[in-house]
Image 1 (cartoon, rainbow, N blue to C red):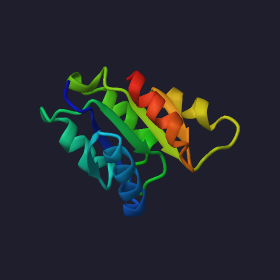
Image 2: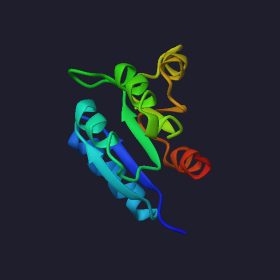
Image 3: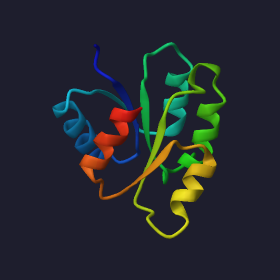
Amino acid sequence: MSKKRVLIIDDDSRNIFALTATLRAKSFDCIACSNAQEALDLLKTNEVIDVILIDMMMPYMDGYEAIPRIKNLDNRKNTPIFSVTAQAMVGDREKCLRAGATDYIPKPIDVDRLLLLLSRS
């Protein structure tokens, strides 16, 4: 079985570094985009992406705008998208799910929970 390929979309290089290091240590293959438009351009191609982790608060196009756009791509309709955000207030999870996210992971990230979600996707 091949490694799951995870696309990380985040404008903070420190978050990309930490997630990539954590996931690679658990045998995931990771690629990253530093903004939602870059990710959309990549996702329009035939690049193999098994799951997407997206930061919800980014400049220019945030996750709330990007997730529906991703879901509207014919080749990505069924790709699991997990919102990763520091917004952990009452109602934020529901807001992410309404935008089309498969699930929600608050920061700081609970690695065990993240790995569980990825294993189920």
